[in-house]
Image (cartoon, rainbow, N blue to C red):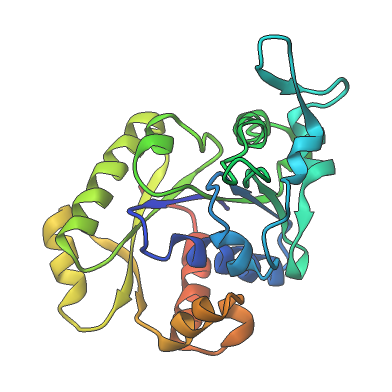
Length: 255
């Protein structure tokens, strides 16, 4: 599987990306998670613990005399992915852009550039041909429009039963299709509470929902505690729904 999770902010994208990564790894896949969101949501969803003081990827890059970041001598996107990814539970390998210490803990420009280079550099790399790649993109449309997930065979567009969420999802799906015409666009309805939620979302996006995930207080509790949902409530309804989602994503796209 090669997946990018996109959509409006606050919809649970990191929870979905991290949980899918853990489920796939438990199923025997080698998983690399690409986190281009400076917020630490994916770390907690994976169970990686608190954000480090400096992104590990900063060790792979250096600045030239103009201030631009590039790889240190001998580093390539493949080597960076192999050497500077951290290890999360179940053996998931993770590349975080993260934030730098000091100066208000701003997003790390060097590590962010490195994540982009890796995302583009491992698309056809033999070393990662058999890996599952899961990208957690930040809220909004910018990274989707700038093709931050060229590895993705499937874009999971997360939506909730609100007009704003549906319209944002429809917009980012359109951008994903422009960037990757051959990719599958799969809408995932999250935090569904009633039988009418899915038809309501479909009426706004004009497309069918690929999978729906129920509202689940156990996942909300895990987020409040800052722990991985799959560890906090492995048998909760939402986790079970995500297991079914992984099974569905493993099947070849029909169109």
